[in-house]
Image (tube, rainbow, N blue to C red; front, side):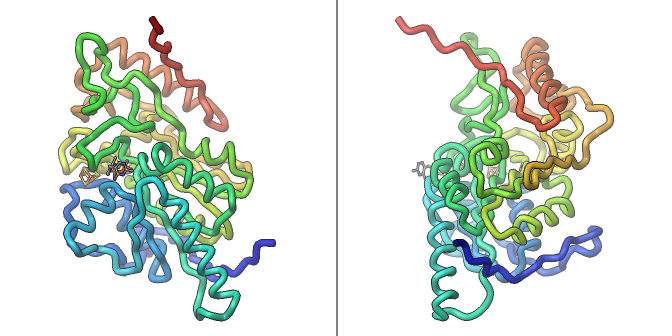
Length: 326
Ligand SMILES: Cc1ncc(C[n+]2csc(CCOP(=O)(O)OP(=O)(O)O)c2C)c(N)n1
Ligand code: SF4
């Protein structure tokens, strides 16, 4: 039987002025100007506080932060392979539980947070993430979603939107829309397949207080939790470094990103616009979509229209026709 040894209760924050001043992700890292994932890290670290261990699967939030031989984390942090963030978190959680139970270590059970890119969460890292969720480890798995494998030079991942130009999905005469497939849905993957998970939420760097509160709520839960955080990448999405928040906000205003919490089977939505803006407004700010025709945009709009209608979100994405076998 699982022993509940978590004692802390991180309080919610009401307003931006109540956000703690302390930083646990400090200045000095080689992330791009305007990097959404870096801002996301800073907010998560602020929310979690000093009693925290971060695991960093390979990706921008490892390489760009920790190059070379120094890091911006003021709490313990450990590199993991891109494949195994969930497994390393599981090991650390199990070790702490045993050490505390046997009296070989004093103090509180720590917040254990995996900070994984979309590749490290729901593609190459999916198996270990899913196993952590399934076994019920007391750890928070965060997918900071910049919608590509960015550290390796912007290649498509399962969360890259339909129609994106990446170096693996370049638009051309044969495939004019670039990426032809619609994205995986990370929160739905976790919710759908892991009975031990009681809290899953989506968040965005555009709403920092909401993001902080979701991190705290997740950390207060005893058991595995998952956050999917929209973190625009100016380099990969080709927009001006000053527009990260504008892009993040437009994603929500157009329905490209949906903000919700799922708690023991119940959905609650945040910042749901009364009337959604056309997705075109979001696309036109970003160079990764400039090649799209009206027909492609209409296809994406139809996908978003179906998605925002769903009460519990899951939506049937158009499935591409498999290539003919000769
Ligand atoms: C097993 C393995 N395969 C491939 C790589 C190369 N690699 C390094 S970073 C990276 C991209 C990671 O993408 P993501 O997890 O989305 O994080 P991001 O870089 O976008 O922050 C890849 C593929 C690796 N380090 N290990
Ligand atoms: S490539 Fe994107 S995610 Fe990586 S450091 Fe630059 S802005 Fe951040």
